Length: 371
Ligand SMILES: C[S@@+](CC[C@H](N)C(=O)[O-])C[C@H]1O[C@@H](n2cnc3c(N)ncnc32)[C@H](O)[C@@H]1O
Image 1: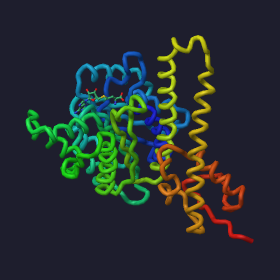
Image 2 (image 1 turned 180 degrees about the vertical axis):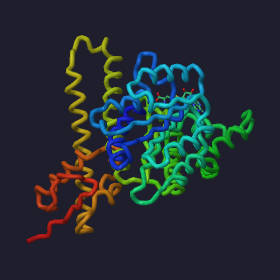
Image 3 (image 1 turned 60 degrees about the horizontal axis):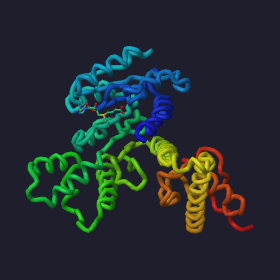
């Protein structure tokens, strides 16, 4: 899921780099890891390095800054980078991202920069992450700054457990770390003990998103990443940007990444049942397609109903301004193709004069008045 979200880096580099001097686009990967995994699956540094070979990004200079604390991972990362075609633009640092971030932000000032923070457990302090945005230019037309952050959900519910255990060793110290990571003690002050862990994690996710966006003036997205549908989330992915186009495109990326995740979960469950099903071979592909198509239909129904309601109240709506209201519970799950289908239905029955084509983010949908 995490790496599926990094497919967003292609449209980021394409769009944010289109007005950048020499097409320069920078990536700071603060918890870089070894670059590739043992089975050669690309990790985040390999995904970033591969952008340079993407035909859609031929006019871009992809500059990577990779920080890794573990010496073995650092050596593997160094070895990976030396094999890359554009290795001169890929920089590898051994050490703690907390000690490097200020210099890296200075080195990338003036160019669109995407920051990926992917720690296990606690990462950078909340204030340090807020300062990424407050210290970068914010005027219209200034280069984009975007942050993708992994936040360990296991740490969150373990910390919650410590709250009710007066004898937990080292409790004060770890709680102070949690305060620093989330920008205050809100996570314990407003804790409601009647909430199940699942509900608490949802509350935590929304509150963290709102604390960060309030402080930075960014918009944001969050996604829960689970190993199985019925599990508690393993971690959250938070995305922050001040650029509307970035927020729109990341929303599309989340929807596609969730589709990939559902397929992986489905295949895994299916493979685990192979022995039981051997006597009754089934077409797994068509089952998955049917399930996906039922899901998509239900999202289109929801979006259609929301649009009808909105168009009753207002004669013109701009999609980008009303994302939440248009998508409702499908926000971050459905994407452009579902919205286009809903619009097509409304156009067909004369509810709107607007069609489903073109750039949807900027699209104005107009109510069709009776003749
Ligand atoms: C989850 S892994 C990163 C995986 C990588 N981002 C990927 O997608 O392939 C976290 C990495 O951060 C490194 N790390 C932990 N603390 C760090 C710190 N303070 N500064 C830099 N790297 C750190 C760990 O050694 C580990 O390799």
